[in-house]
Length: 400
Image (cartoon, rainbow, N blue to C red; front, side, top):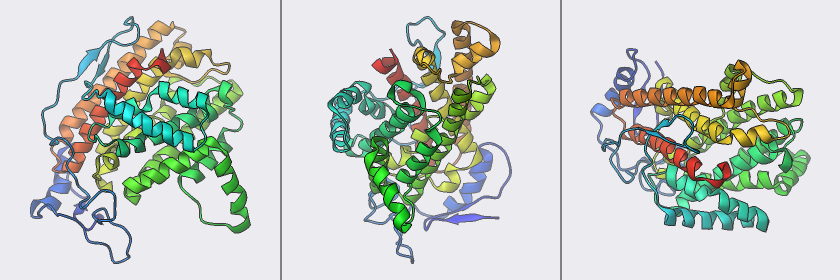
């Protein structure tokens, strides 16, 4: 038997198998006789703990956001998208549209972008893209524009790396340079120990490259609002995503077209799951690691992240196909595999998306037996993330 003691609860990892009931058995013993704590003591090491008063999560690691996790949910819907010619996408409904909040986030994001060296043209493009609207739609458990700036900055940095390093040849993306660029991005996100004279040139590059400046500044702000575990969770999901990017780069460099299943295997580690790792720090609570990384929870979150990124593929087909070095895309890979039209490949991709959303819906129902308010808020946050992401893609000029 193994256990994790986070100074509040001990979460037992043994118990009977079976979705939902297994997790309920795992955690019911830890919660049964223990009152909800007000805060956690500082550890003997002096390191910050989730309940420390100097941690930006507040006086308690758990702070109930706007609604109780058991609040009634609106049903999923079949939604038209794009020009309406393709089959509808099965999605959770969007739960918040607040354009004033989106504008306030974008104002802060523009100020930040200017501070790290964005040109006027890049600032205008940033405004048009609307990352403030993205996080307003997807992170629905906070209405604080300063906290919501955290995912706006992180998503801006992720998209910058995707465009400038990985995907867009017109912006300088070069598959032969991608691996070395991503190793530097890892150093920007997860600072390395000082290595004397060998650290000086690294520091110079981290200051000179705009994408690396964005990563370094964004992760610094995340650290101010999250626990160390939440920061590393975001870092390592990013690094996993980077590995998939190198696979795409190899395919582009060699001219090899991966099969749809090969592409999807890589794509499932390169999804909006990475963005979803920010749900609880932005809202001001923390899902314990042994819950967050439990197989059932992780599979559910991966399905949601993959479904959301398939929406991105569906909206990006024309842009990806038009690049002088075509970008991997689920619709394009299916069309190449089957020798079918893009319309037929789109239908297959829509079916795959809808199946994954229904699987997440079933996972969510089963996991509601787990007596953890943090987990229940997180799963509801994942659901809202999917609904908000669809709304953002369907109304964003980047994809029109």
